Each structure stands twice: as structure tokens, then as C-alpha cells.
Image (cartoon, rainbow, N blue to C red; front, side, top):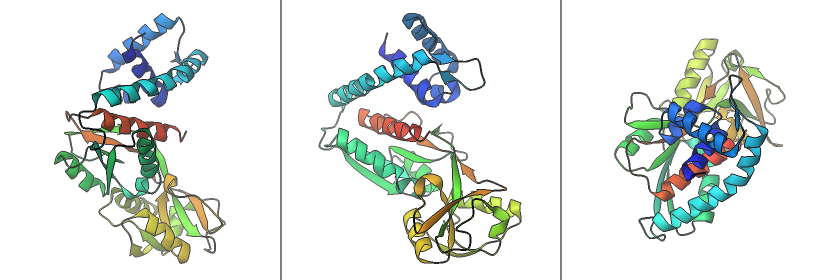
Length: 294
């Protein structure tokens, strides 16, 4: 069993999708399939069930993964310690992120990186998707968590998961007890949203138009944390990705439908750029965090 077999196995086990796993590994699907078959021949068991539309881990695959992944983590840490070109005290990760991911996901991932590599420095920039693409191409960012950019063939996008956007209101809001809300019901509703330069806002405007709804956008904030606080203190409603907010005694988080607003966040980096081991380690942490949602 070779290290590349383990990495191919882990990528497919995390994504359960040959296309996404091949994109992550930057190999062809046929190469990935061949390597997985070699590994299955070596261990003498099928590791993935390919009989349905969706790839699934077999019982043997799940057992193998539970034993291999801790070992792979140790290998990656060892390689990182040996191969980091910069001294650990000066190694820097420059990460771009849109506001919703900077509320929870990115801080959690940064915390994990600093726990594993206490000498590393991290610089996080909260930007809209267009700004992120521009700073990646100019070399000012190493990696980003964002959405798929349009007309940017020099950037590589790796989808992480599909995410619904939910209505968020204070506990005293008239909609707070609802189990679901249709987009048309937000007509003339007083709202706080992201500014129009954000792709999420552009997508929401399309959803409103499709539903024949025109909300009263009385506030625009370019960061999700302040949006949540404003909603908590006022009668305003907001629409926020599900991973960025949790319902509590003072907030209600309600699914939206007709249409249901969805986004697909992913990792973004410049094609052909040299990525140091610490950058690759950061990307792996983000992948694992995204995968733990399911």
C-alpha cells in the first residue's frame, strides 16, 4: 500500500464523488478509479459500493478509513515539519473568506491549524467573491473559502458542500414561530441584507424576483456577525447561511422555500501556484470541517 493510494482513498471517502475527488487531487477520474481498484485488490475487499448513483463506503471501507486517517494525519504533520520552506515562526497562511464563513467555520479552522502548528501565522481577509478572485490572481492570497467565480479560468474551485440560506428573526418577530416561510411572504418585509456586490445578495435578489416579492431593505451590512446582532435588537429580518447562525432563546432560524435559496461554497486557489505544506494542511483542515457537517 502506497501513500498515494491512501490519499486517493481519503479524498473519495470524504467526497463520495469521483468527479470531486479527482478535482481535489488534480488527476483524471480514470486515474483515480484505477488507483482505488489497485488498493481494493491489495486489501482483498471492495471499499466503495458503486452499484447506485451515489458512491458509498462499504463496511470494509469504513473500517479501513477509521484506522488509516489518524495515521495519515500523523504523516502529514511529519511532512509539514520537514518540508516547510519557511521557518515555522514565519510561515504565513493568507486566507480569503466571505462574511458567512468568517463567522464560525474559518475561525474554527484557524484554531485547529494553530493548535497543530503553533509557530504559523494566519492572515484572514473578509471580502466579497469578486475581491477574493482578484487578490488570489494578484498573489495576495494563498487560499480562499468562497463561491465559484464566473469567467475566471485561472482559478481552481473545489466544491465543499451545498448550503441552504435561512430566514433569521428575533424571538419577538411575527414570523418567529413559523416552521417554514415562502419567499413571497417576505414582500414588503423590513430586512437587513448583504450589499449588492456580494454574490449571495445577487442570488437572493433573483429569488425575490422569481417569487414576485419586494422586501424593504432598510439596512445593508457587509459582515454577517453585525447582521445577526442587528436582527437580535430590532424588528428586521435577515437571510443568512445555515452554518453561520444557530437558533436560541432570542433568535429564530427558519427554512425558506419557493424558491429555496442554496449556495455551494468551496476552496479556491490559483491554478499552477506553488502551495507550501502549511497551505495544503490548511486546505485539508477546511475539507475535514466541511465534511463533518454531514
